[in-house]
Length: 242
Ligand SMILES: [Fe+2]
Image (cartoon, rainbow, N blue to C red; front, side, top):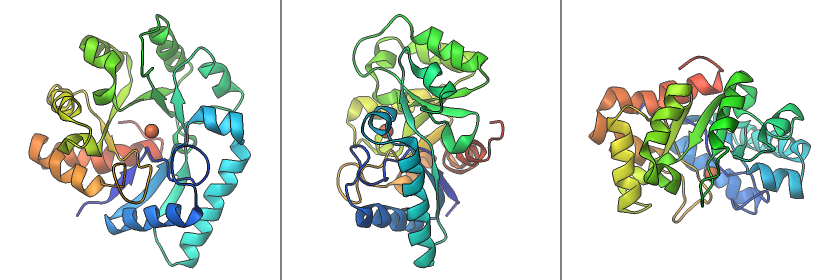
């Protein structure tokens, strides 16, 4: 099994719609470790962090989890990031330290609107790029915006963005549309990273990177699957070019 790195995960307890208890967060880390995961970047929603808690609180939570894992003799490491919904305040929040990049790198996880298609999305992406950041587009295979306007994903990747598919989408857990969109996106060379987007230890949104890797291999072969589950997410984590 290859080394796995997960760059989209909601395992921080009591922060967003992820687990509420530390024990479940630790359980998710152990499951990730059992799937040969070396590091996970946790990505709580920016809105939940800033409206209900603070960046300092989530930093402390990451420290606490890493400490607990160390005491348990686990080798997996947890790093901090954020899932940033795209809006007009995003760049300002980056400047003010309220919107976090992935492990303090030049990569920033950006989520498109779930509904509607605001006219400003290209401008925000362009602003992030000219600020020196590389937007990582979260789960385009599950977003209406890209389903209705497939060229938009191509344009964003041309501009310099990378895109992140969800492991569960690759074997139909998010339905046939997400599955078929994932296959299209991968076969057109527009997918760079596979991540788990884990929200719980067991059930619909559990940690399934091993399964994601297996299905990616089946769809695009071992080389590309290894790039998307190991090489590219490690590059993000270490702030290196993809
Ligand atoms: Fe997410």
